[in-house]
Image (tube, rainbow over all chains, first blue to last red; front, side, top):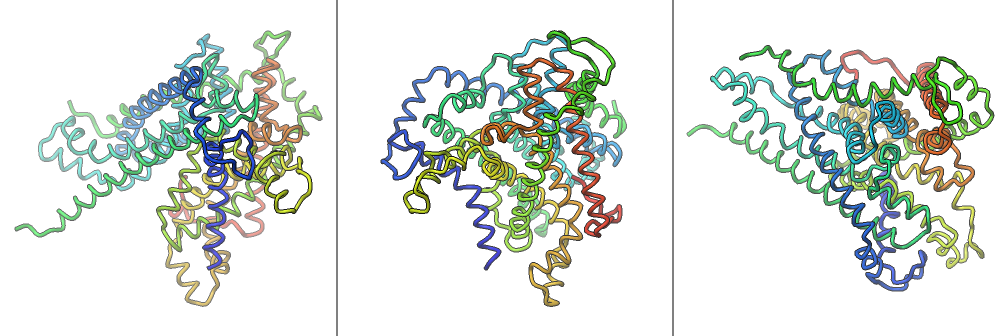
Length: 267
Length: 292
């Protein structure tokens, strides 16, 4: 079928460049060309002795973790608010939180830079985290919105009618329903932060994150080391994505199990 | 203690709203204020003058790089949308392949810099494409023009923004009922005919939205043109970024950022008006209006 061939060709266009990077990261010679001179782990060995790289990775992991935590907290409260708002309130939350996704990183980066300069804030790890949260929140809100549309508010009302306090309703009813999507979104926030480059380059000051380190390497020379770092970063992103997918699956399975229980006739 | 639903909601929304106000709205406003300030010998002076705007609009360099950004943006966004549509159609109407969706997500979440680097590797003088073509005998000496050309910039940008655009197209196509497509197919329309007669008119708003969002992100991307376009890759984004990193004339950079923003809005209005005039975009009832 023609459509099928076209679609897989487009997918190949997306995937082949990444596969070539992975392939050359195992190349025994520094040449980035065919014929392939054999497999070797020499570039990976070189990487593991690199102290600068190690500190950049640790910095990026720290920033990504903090970004995910802040985004999770803000996302959780915003989601609970979303469930309690009417059309107007939801529209306002959305306008305020989703807009940054439609702006180039450049705009977000320079506007935060002028804010920090104007308020005399020293550029540091904290300013990077602040910037990353601004980019991660829109993604979380978009993901949560789709899930919350399926949320049945009468479940909360039922719990309240049965005498549960507000805190009990939250802990036993609302939280278990929204938690898997929230956690999956927080993992995505982690991935976005770990990879962010454009905004970071404006608010990082003298800090070096992994993408900034890769950038400085790319600019200096075309070294096969970049292939090895890229491959590791790629597998790391895939691992994060798989983790978020598995959590999503668990949610779906528990939801389906819940439905089945409802459908089964009582003995 | 029992608060009303909306009161509790307002309380819960406060942290996020405050966060976005302080770190998104306020910075944008400061940037806007900056665009009227002046910069003299590396000192930024609060002021209210239009010199930054007028000077940029009168500068041939500004227009040259802006046209370059718009050209790259429009061409890339068009290519990206054209490639997204068959994939979106396939994912929505033919096979809800989870594997394919996750392959697309993986490319979306694979590093931005890695993808730029991948295309440099592929297109370089000693790169994969050149050596392959040499061995096949298609060319007899390496073509240096693959890299640092508008071609290299466009193919890389399409590669970077395609996954995002596919997801936008999937979400806009998902809202068109499958029955409509099936009915058209049953009545003897080809799948291409069904697309143009049934899907395109219904999804037009979503597709134009996907096109514009891709355009704005591509036109504002200055790293890819710089890394793959060489001297042909000068765009407004690079000009603005350099004002903030090298030259130090922040007010001028701020004004240029807002000019670029203005250009995007004008283009959006023009494209929507063109769509309406040609009947491609039909105003839909408020009830079926889609939300991004």
